[in-house]
Length: 469
Image 1 (cartoon, rainbow, N blue to C red):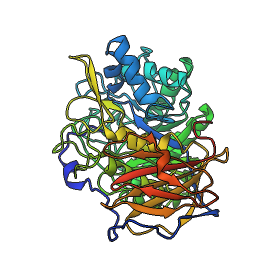
Image 2: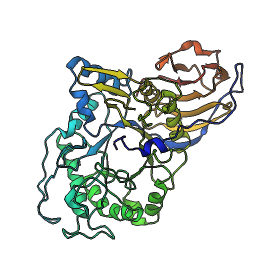
Image 3: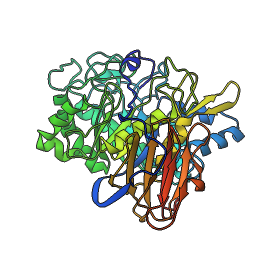
């Protein structure tokens, strides 16, 4: 979703945890409740849709390599484990969208398809192959709209609905199954390139009409279409995701509609929501695994902001707090940021300028990487007790036994507390540290060492062998 719309400024909210400022000096310890388990973690990622991958590709060879390391590398970069791809729907790229794999009406919904494939897909094929080289193997493809000839408004932009859904009648006929096969064919084209699309989504923000690629589904229509595409996706070996509402609370209606329909629920593998109209700070009403699949703070008033803590919504610490809330309050299994790279006044992790063959890095990247580098796919969130006021704390156990505690000190004072970890390695992210190892923050021996938490910082504690797996 393009971030030009004015609503984002009004609805994007910075989550600030309540509590009186913490003070220096020893505090009651942070105790891990290892028997208390919450959601499994599938990973962290960002989108490469709307031809943003081409920005990276069009850099000089040396700069391109540097940016790819920043965006993809496990040890010195953002370390994503999920990439979100955009499935094109338009015949032109007027809105920076990817081109459709079937730009022209084949002659009706039952006509023989005339699919086309360029092996490039707005730079996404190249980028996913670069990701694969670095061990990233999970790809979620999502469609912003069906091609215009499949919709009642005749264009991929400005909302409109898929012909054949309940309440949507078109002279051209019922395009529901044709659209389902269109989406699955997209996954098959990637398979031809040696890339597996793991999850596929048929809608992006179905409750928001945009001047670029967009398409409306009511909750009942979304449940209806799940039953159409579900068997087709299953036959192709692709998991089905829905519904990417533009707000977390707004997702409730979609989850409830699918849960109320046993057949639809049987076909749904993943429930998805965005964090714009309302933040991802509570569980959603579904029994399916849940991902937060798109959010970024508005850059309309902030412009390009690299700061960690300047009081703006695009600060690194603000992004860290949203990741914490998404995992620890909303019980989401994945956090997928909007864009890894973009241009101009963007809230992406990296800003790319092809005219000067240059790039800049935001502190948002290091906030993201603090979670993604150490909390790996297959981890489980575990309980943690004893957090003093002003601290946002969450804990995780990786499949290899490594334990990770993430601590955001939202106060303006240093906090000292003990933590239930044996010989943890500490990493500090704040206004002067970019996810840097900081051994001086941990003192003492045994199972409850003392950790010093800098003001307005994110401290990542890892017990075990960080960097493996």
